Length: 354
Ligand SMILES: [Zn+2]
Image (cartoon, protein in one colour):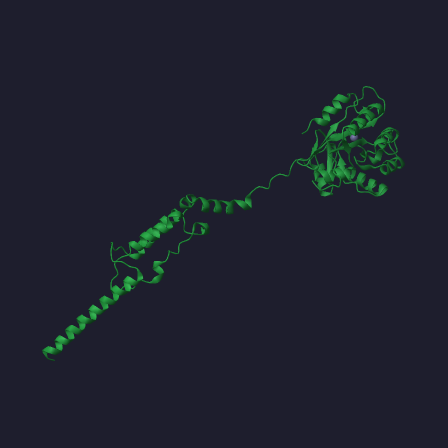
C-alpha cells in the first residue's frame, strides 16, 4: 500500500459521503420536508397530538399541520415514510363508542359523541309512552219502574227523558263489543263521536217490560248483567225474556249466580258463582259471556285472580267515573244513575270527565 492509493481511498470515501448527503437533501426537498425546529421523538408527538384531536375535533387540521412542522430533523438512519405525512388515523368523533379508549369526561366534552353514546345507552330502556287516554261514560241502571224514594229504581218517564237527551245531544249508545273495540283503541267503522254504554244490573223483569221498548224507540243497544240463579224468581227475567232482549240488541253478561257478596265466599264458592253464571249464559244464549260485573261492586284478590285465570276480558265496578283505557280492565268505572235525581244531575254526570 503506498501513499497515492491511500489518498484515492480517502477521496473516494469523501465523495461517497458527499453523494449520500446530497441525495438525502434532494430526497427531503421533493418530499416537502424542511430542516428546522426541535427534535422530540415522533412517538411523543403522536401522543401529544392525539389527545387534543379527540378533545376538540374541529381543531384536527391545525394539529396535523403543526405536527408536520415539528417534524424532527432527519438523520441518515431515518427515512421518512409517506404515511406519516398523512392525517393521523385517529378515531373521528362520530365513530367514538364506549369501547374506545376515550375517557368519560373527555367524551362528555364532545357534544356529538356524547349525545350519540347517550342515545345508544338510553334507547333500549326508554319507557314506552302511554297511549292517548280514551274515556267512555258507562251508565249504571237497575230497575225501571215506579218506586218513589228508591234510588236504584228509575221511573220509565225519567228514563225516556234521559234517552231523549242522549239522542238529541249527539250521544251514541254502543254495543258491548263496540265499547271494547273503542276502549282498546281499535278502528271502528263509523266510530261515534260521543259513545256511551248503557248497562242494567240484576235482570229485573221491568227491563223487559219497560226499558226494552223505550230503548227500541231509538234503536239503542244495552248491556244486561244477570244472575242466572234468580231467573225463576218473581220480579226477575226468565230465559225467554232474556232471549228477547238479546234479539233486541242487548248483550247479556254474568253478575254471579246468586248475586253474592263475593269477598265473603271461599275461592271455590267464588269460582262457582263466577264460572257457572258464565256457563249458563253461554249455553242458553250461544254467545260469549266473558265480561263480568261485581254484585254490590264487591271483589277481593281471589275474585280478580279467578277472572284473570279464567279468561275474562273486562269487569265493571260501581266506582264512580268514566271507564278509561288507563284503568285495570277488571276495574272499569261506571256512573250510577240515581232514580231520584233530575235531568240536570244526569247531564252533569255525563259532562264530568275523568
Ligand atoms: Zn247487582
